[in-house]
Length: 373
Image (cartoon, rainbow, N blue to C red; front, top):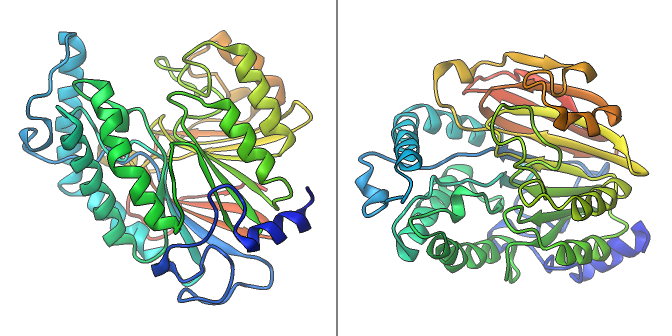
């Protein structure tokens, strides 16, 4: 399928789950004239992005009553996160969301949140669903009419019983996303379009490679292909949890390499979170290119509201931890930047390319500018 075929089928609403836009977005996903304005001649539009948000509040009994963990150390760490979240959501995170909302304009076609929209750690199905609903509706009210889309993060599926947390997510989120996208979203892997571009949401918690392969096939011919995934495709530089990347946790190297090659041959742009950092990685290999932008909105303290680069350049990838894990990937790295910074992001897409402006904290001016394509 070439790009003309993709556009023809896209217009007919036959691409995966991309039948049409939400009613309140008035055809903004299709690229036609609607409430959010005309489609530009160069196919340009913007996407406002929030990284992990870990929505929560004080007191911790509001969402976490009945929560416990059989591992006392792990539970103690989680309760420290409750306190962190409550403190940042009392002031800093509302300021960050307000700043992000100011970035929405007539050319904004989507608001994307990279997963871990909530802290999780609730005591049952209904409690998890309520926390998800409260977080989603808070962001929706702040960000306005543009469709709001999120992907499943590990915290979104975490609770006293993870099985109940997963049930709570499935009880609320697919139906809510269906309302946003104007079509039925049944699972945690799905696709939609904005004009000539394909957006494929991937559940990294339990990768369903066959579904992702099908979505890639159905969206062949797109101008750009975006992979929306909570965790990165390439490992991130940290002393802990560096294996939390696509197929990294399950150590299935065959599946990891197969999917990486498929992504590379489609020259995908990965938009992810999870690491609580702002990281740019441009990688060439497997017959193509993968550009990965990792984004963070966990404004845990005032310092993370500043843009301070900790590693940069090809030699900087993996330099912080010094782990041999990065040796496999380093030869293909052509561009790299890493900062432990939180804020909001505006991605600009057109025929000319793709850029991202990062606003640290609630800054009114861009703190960094990234060229993805």
